[in-house]
Image (cartoon, rainbow, N blue to C red; front, side, top):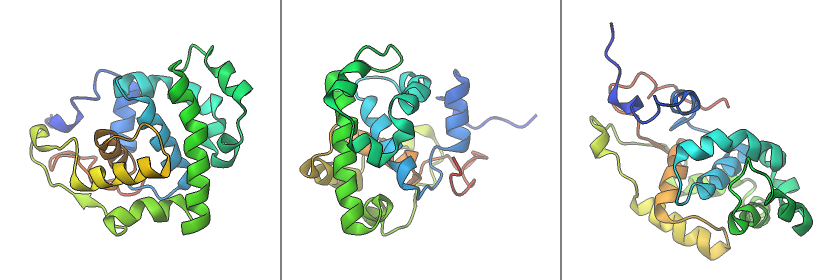
Length: 193
């Protein structure tokens, strides 16, 4: 029997985490809607585990119109206040309202750069950074690029984007490939989610 890579150890306690590791994590995405979804979900995870967020993901998709950027930018205070009663979400006012605020900023970035994808991927010149890690201890939680991205996004008005969150965001859309060298999911290519 083939030995399981240590790369998957963080995901094996939960089927949704396992699916995320195998099919999405560190797989390249250039889809604006998906990139926006990951930006928002990573922001929701501040102070919490990714397991908590991934298990609430469908509730977030339902509440925020599958993270349709234009629809999220037009959400009313009344609608957002109603979401504070939704037990499927993290009922934190700042986090709930951040989805609308972030969508408004992202719409401006799309107008300026043609797509959110073009803006975000410019941080790596459109290329994936592959760490070629051998052990999980080598995988970073922050980088110079995530620190710069964090500062820039904060200046633009995007919320919940500290450098650790932006690094996780980079992993989520495949800007970095942090699958270990022996992980069979490391070269799955583009995210088709």
